[in-house]
Amino acid sequence: MAPKINKTAVLIGAGNLATHLGKALQAKGIEILQVYSRTEHSASSLAESLNTQFTTSLNNVNPNADYYFVCVKDDAIAEIVEAMPEVKGIVMHTSGSIEIDALQKFEKSAVFYPLQTFSKNKEYLNFEAVPLCLEANSDIIFNEVKQLACLLSSNIQQANSKQRKTIHLAAVFACNFSNQLFAIAASLLKEQNLNFSLLYPLIDETVAKIKTVSPDEAQTGPAKRKDFISMEKHLELLKEKPQLAEIYKLLSEIIMKK
Amino acid sequence: MAPKINKTAVLIGAGNLATHLGKALQAKGIEILQVYSRTEHSASSLAESLNTQFTTSLNNVNPNADYYFVCVKDDAIAEIVEAMPEVKGIVMHTSGSIEIDALQKFEKSAVFYPLQTFSKNKEYLNFEAVPLCLEANSDIIFNEVKQLACLLSSNIQQANSKQRKTIHLAAVFACNFSNQLFAIAASLLKEQNLNFSLLYPLIDETVAKIKTVSPDEAQTGPAKRKDFISMEKHLELLKEKPQLAEIYKLLSEIIMKK
Image (cartoon, rainbow over the protein chains, first blue to last red):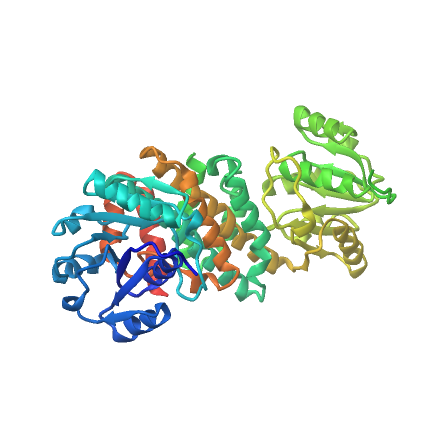
């Protein structure tokens, strides 16, 4: 059983992040009072798995919680904030790219940005090593949010709005785009009846290397070697995949220029 | 001490791959007879670390070894092959993108393509999990090369020329290009006085996910969510980095199209 710490939270949103955050908060003894989602199915199923209430109307959001986590798409935040009632606790959004000012209607506001990728279908994500990037509209609120964050993770980073945007952008390159490159590799292999798992050792080694030397120092491959024969052959293989050829050329140019 | 297995090898080339391969072969009891490199410094320093002879002249390559590993840039292979003497053993190149026919002047030829990224400065690379992609100019030679490969690794893949080219191309996307995305992320963070290590948990989770679900299923991020506000903000941050903006747009388009 998680220890009770007499703090309560409301989740605004019922997607991947809300799901993982709700479970992690609950595991640390924070009571989830309510889940809001405009989609009844999403709201009810997350509420059920957290054994709590749900609502599909922002008017009905419980105003007495200590923490409100706004876990919705960035382009839905403004609308949600406008429709939310006044509340007692700290309202936090969880977005990498939205300013804290988006929450200025609330007396106590903060940003609670977990630098991690979330999937609903993954059983339980351990927040312990997840960097939590924090910002608040006052020092007092910052300290309160920091204490909350410390319950979940040992990796706390104060980041102002400009820094957080850069972190988010860097994460898109390092994570979302790398993942897409993995997807491209998998589809190329599949066409030749080869299994993507063939690349696991290579991917593992690539990731291990960037932790011992910088990615710039770790760079290898045809572009790094200026091996034009290989590059031409690769572009020949990609001649019916113009978008992939374009990515190939661009990334190779960047590598060669360094 | 490594067991003696009474086989001998010559390394043609003294770069990252020759270094790791030489050490791995030696550790398995194969005697390295000689190292060739046209650069005396490279040849002598690898020969010294392997406690063997070196030459900078292909005329002087020892013709009596069992195995010859051609570990040079792809665009140097043809020239090297032409200048090499007739030899007794199996001549193997180690390239992902060169046809086995490049070695047709030799009676016994094969391709020995380790699907891994090699850096000289990394102490010792364990080949055990490195997929070795093999092809040979006859079944007899294939079996001999396969036995040799089995000494080093448990992950043996027979791959014809077309498949090997595709493996190489897929590896460029999954490894070399991912690494460059990591380098881009690191430089963006550095501009904001943030440490690249902030992204390690995210990168680890990204790689862990593709082994449990496919990369396509694992895809997250602004493009996947069609979160145009975030994407516009990111492009704004990249407005003085046109090449990065271009990569951002291209990869986002591919993700959105799926």
